[in-house]
Image 1 (cartoon, rainbow, N blue to C red):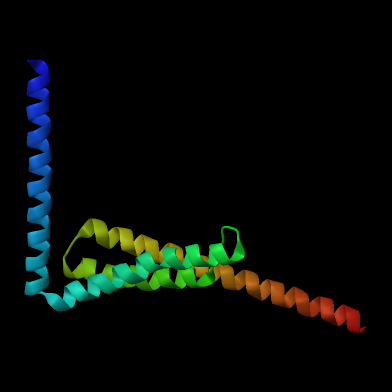
Image 2: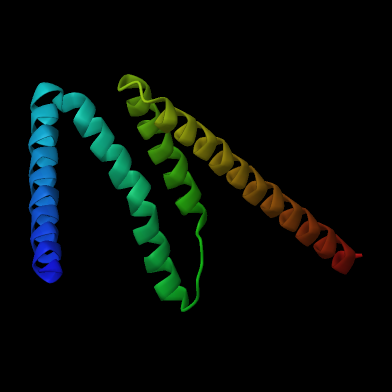
Length: 133
């Protein structure tokens, strides 16, 4: 008897999950119809933000090792800013906070990358001057 009750309960849960998914999709379609410009903006942000992982994967495959290109961080910043703007529009404080913090971290990473490159170039110039003397 217990087995049948669990089976029925699992079937009901699956049906409820399916109905929830269908309702969510219907609500998303309605939202797109009501506000297509903002939904397109959010989609663009997601494409840029998610595309950074595809970029990282492709570059890593070419290098035959895990590698995070500088473009990854620029895509992170652009996608995060677009999604921050969208989050402000839909007035979601958790998303606003998350994308604000993300953007600051990505900007810091870009700063560190360029600061390191500047030091490397400076050291290369010093080494070249030593060889010329």
